[in-house]
Length: 109
Image (cartoon, rainbow, N blue to C red; front, side, top):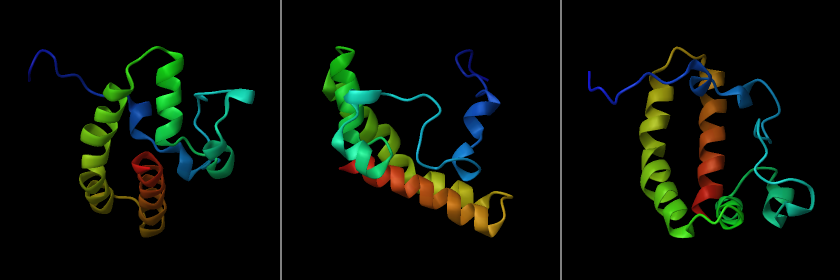
């Protein structure tokens, strides 16, 4: 095993959206009047929300866009394939994939 390789904490492996309110993150990115119009409509974070957060934190937008496109979006299919091979029930597999695809759709915009 490479010295830089570590196991992910278990909380990263659990999709709580299947069991709780599917329209919110545990930690909100933006609060109150800072909520963009898209979030108030969809209740989920979109590409614009993350770009706005980058602006507020003085993080270059390009880095966020590259991360979304090359790290997240290119892995949607492998993630859904992994879900399909999992021990989840068929109903939970469908629900999980729906959550992933909904978020991916918002990140693609």
